[in-house]
Amino acid sequence: MIPQVSDSELELMKIIWAHEGTALYACIMEKLTKTGHTWQKNTVITLLSRLVEKGLLKTKKIGRRNEYKAIVSEEDYQASQTQVLLNKLYEGQAKGLISTLIQRDMLTASDYEELKKFWESEGSGHE
Image (cartoon, rainbow, N blue to C red; front, top):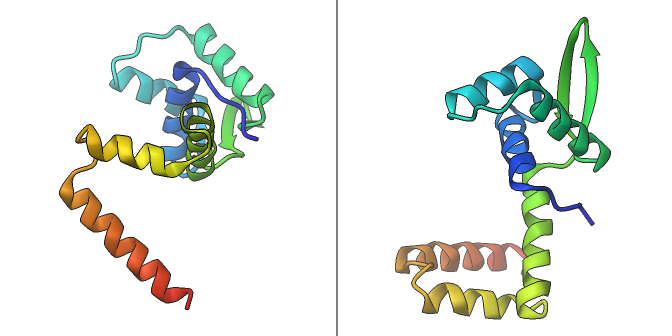
């Protein structure tokens, strides 16, 4: 199972995933500044170190610069966290989650139609 990360750690992972899974420290800091984050250098280094310890990133020295590479893809992380949510709130049943999305208007009619087309195309490919 892929470990959960804090919201701050997830912000860093999103930056790295957005750069095809690899980003230099300077690039990460630049993106944080552009999005209005005012985190100090030590804070970012600590968060990146935690992500390395958790097995989501690996680091490589390129000269005097650090490059961070995602070991876990965004899709794999999302799938893992979705399973955690399903298990925690819906006893592992996706039907309960989908019902909540529909009943609370979190899933629009057009979202439903897109999903229906997706399921129909996936189903026809497995026959």
